[in-house]
Structure formats: C-alpha cells, structure tokens
Image 1 (cartoon, rainbow, N blue to C red):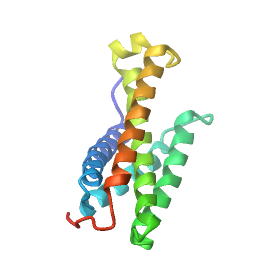
Image 2 (image 1 turned 30 degrees about the vertical axis):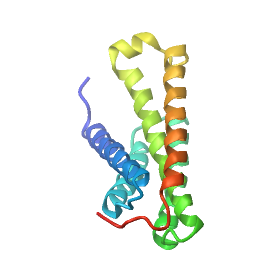
Image 3 (image 1 turned 135 degrees about the vertical axis):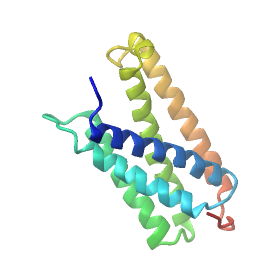
Image 4 (image 1 turned 135 degrees about the horizontal axis):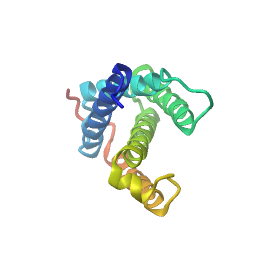
Length: 162
C-alpha cells in the first residue's frame, strides 16, 4: 500500500524532530544552548504531534494519548524556554520537558519500527511480546540516564550558539 502525502509529510517532520532532538541533547550534554536547533526541534515536534491527529480514526488510541502528552510537555518547554527565558529553575524545566517530548517521539519510532519492519514485526506482532517490551525499557533507561546527565551539565552559564 502506497503512503499518502500526509503520511510522508508526517514521517519527514518526525525524522527532522528526532534528528534535531539528538542535536539538542548533545548541546545539553556539552552545556551549549544551540538556540536554532532547539527552535527547529520544538517546531517539528509540535508539528509531529499535531499532524498525527490528521489521520482518520474511529476510537481513541495510545498514539492519540501520547500525542496529547507530548503537546502538553512541549507547551511547558516552550513557556520555559521563551516566556521564562530559562531563568533559574526554568532551565531544568525546559530540559526535562523537551527531553520528555524527545523520548515520546523515540518511543513512537520504536513502535512504528516493530509494526512496519518485517523482521521486528515477526518478533512482536502484537507489541505485547518481550522483544518489544525489552526494547522500550532499554529506550526508557537510556533517556532517563542521558536526561539526568544533561540536567547536571546544562547550567546557567551555557554558551549560546546556533
């Protein structure tokens, strides 16, 4: 079955969000703000969640719930970054909620890979099998670890760069 234009746009935006999220994380870990990269991350991640609701649906799905959680996290991150200028505790608030949105995108990526890649789908056809659960737990542990490390390293004195 051929992908629709909406699907292609949604996937492209999602990939850009994931890639810029990785750059954003590297900035946090190296105590660099990377304002331009963060702006692209926020914009594409908001668009990823919003465009997810454009697909036809007949009942509430886990993807809709994750999209809503992501949009709330992104709203908090945007307020922390732009309205509060990451002053004092808002810096850590920004980092936590930006990383939560990044994690949720990565979580959905893993779910999509298990649905669409034949070899992975064979391992976990209903996504309730151990390979899927183990992969998601590893992803969660990774994001918790790098988020904690980033929170320690991303300080008020972070250098500003694109």
